[in-house]
Image (cartoon, rainbow over all chains, first blue to last red; front, side, top):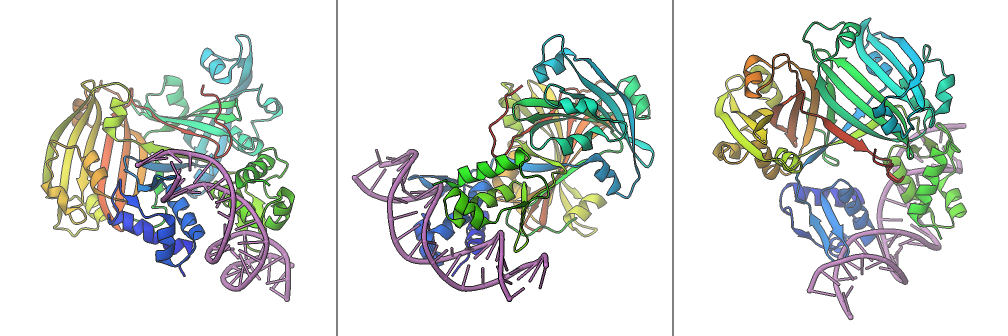
Length: 240
Length: 240
DNA sequence: GAGTGGTCTAGACCACGGG
DNA sequence: CCGTGGTCTAGACCACTCG
């Protein structure tokens, strides 16, 4: 009689209540199917979801065990910069500082797998929230991987939005850090002396090609990157 | 003849190759089942996984559409601090600075849903990598939710590890920012003047109870938080 | 070898929601 | 209304791997 959600939630409850503790072996699917009055397929679907969430580990013949929870995951959503600002009810403005094809420095050449002589597209721009500098973007685009970028007018469309629309799928690597801006960066962001910046560096791939490397600077006093991760199955806690 | 992985990968390929573009309607499960020579259940499982990955949106009667990819997600793994250091081959040391039951300040009272008079457990500690300060931890623990914390000796076991072991399941909220340490913090972390800190603030829930709020400071010059997100189905790009 | 999970089938009924 | 996805069943075969 039980649907897979009920089976799933019941099993999760036994784990979170520590009725089944980390390391414990869970009854086999056939046993649970009988207990819950459903077929093994239904139990299997429930168990699959719990395993996907990382609560249990399953191995043929060895059975299913409650996982030792060692670390917690967090899912960040990196929004479109324009949306991020407009969603807060602020006006979004965009300024292209410079955009030119230039010889790629060594670090970029390595990331893009380019030879010594090759060039790439380098551009810098500023994003404003209510006319206040919100993000300074320093981006390299791999023209070997994305040759169409050369014909784009990035004074009109910001590279963030253009790339998201033009590149169908990719992997990404993010690095977050705190740093001290150099004098030019500080001036562009209109920072007070001594003000730190929150730095996001992102590398993006299309299949095996690196398509872009971007370095995003935010004023330290104004920027907070937030993520909320809920239990995969349990109800959402009160938002404090 | 096709298994659900083949069906899934074939459909994903049509999306990433832009054969099916964002907004497009995908053939119904029955059609795809006939095309791939399998049952609708197999197609359904493939589509479920693709939908979970966020590539498509499904609605009864309306059918399945390719999603407009507006923002990218990133999955962070917050490791055990000891592991993070030891995995780099460095020596981990831990120092409890202070640990006392104290009246909770207003912000903590609000987060923990406490009344004006109530107290909570406040502790501060330092984590070292090769004897260099790596993380300054300032933590409040809600004794209403986790009364066992009062009997713990946090000079021996650091609160990070104890909580991960003691609390079976929870949600969490992370906020990342860059900041300027106050003089005491700067001294504890042995920072040079003007050095910024990378700040992680985390709230953790057990069901509807807030169990702990922790503020973690890292020296800005030494700390980088990295995350690598791969396509859910495609092979991993070359690690640059 | 044998027990467990992984997957598939053929068919069925239902819930949602667009037209 | 009625097409679509959501879910379930009863049964089957297979793949892995522990003992």
